[in-house]
Length: 235
Length: 223
Image (cartoon, rainbow over all chains, first blue to last red; front, side, top):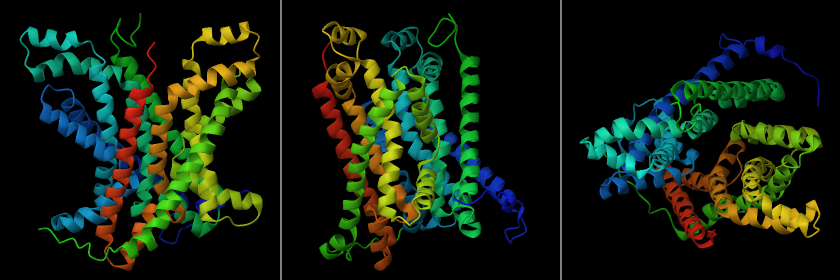
């Protein structure tokens, strides 16, 4: 299998930077896509998840339809839809950079999964909580804001954590529309240097580190927000 | 401002020569990886639950390693490494079969592990009490129930697996998505073909998930 050779990382790629610098830059793109897509997914997924638990049948239908559409089309196909199809149907979107399109694609794809978790979190609460909120005179939005959501989000921190780790892994699909992220770097640098094993090892390690960091961060958040005596809280 | 879509190029001739070949490969890959993945995954789950460190440690390392790497990277790794190990190039299709089987086994094994743990202890004790060995207990009492309890989850994972087969794009294998893409390039209608690909994937995955939901209601054991 040949011998190790890591020296190429300090070699120039031909455009004034080393392979190491290129890789760090690609890591930055991976993290940028992941963080922005996660924000989109959390906002949209929460709205859709909440809609599915409201008493309004039209809202429930919208939330369900959204979730089914974005869950049942492969991520790569969704990225192609955003990149090739939507700008050529709505011509005014032509000038939107592909980075934004990928963030939206990954964000909406993940929003379907988060909507499932938010719905499950709200439905896991005893029905009496909702009625109690309404009975003391809170409006429905107030009941959600002050009674249901604070507990529901605490319940779903573990699945949200694994979804955040998934989103880092899923950024790798952005290679297909030439976003300069880690997987794109791995494919191109592998061809240029033929040191595939070393490059893949380094890239895999960076994915590892990123996912692990998210895991620790979520653990910290979970500890900080826990309610004593409640689910996951200290006894 | 909306441009017009034109699907007139899409004749049966075009569909059968470009798309069907890819569809067949996607289904084949899903089926092989599902069967291989469940068989290997069940063995890995049994290793993890065996209580013997020399079996459990490598098994959990295998599962945790594969579950923390993006599938695209796993596809690239196998495509790079297998030819180096066997000393000759491997086609994209064969490489896909091996990669997906090994990768999905890690996910199926977690499902089977949960399934095995969902079977109550009393069942195992009952098996021992009537004189069964550990292997017989697993084979005749625990695994059949674990499998039945987890059937909807296993099938849901298979739907995800079917969606993930589109990622063989990374090594250029000819799957369903590729079939649409090639047709789109040939007739200069990429927008229409990507749109159709999305619709077809949706129809397949949505119908399958409806079936899984019905199955779930049907086989739910009332305890």
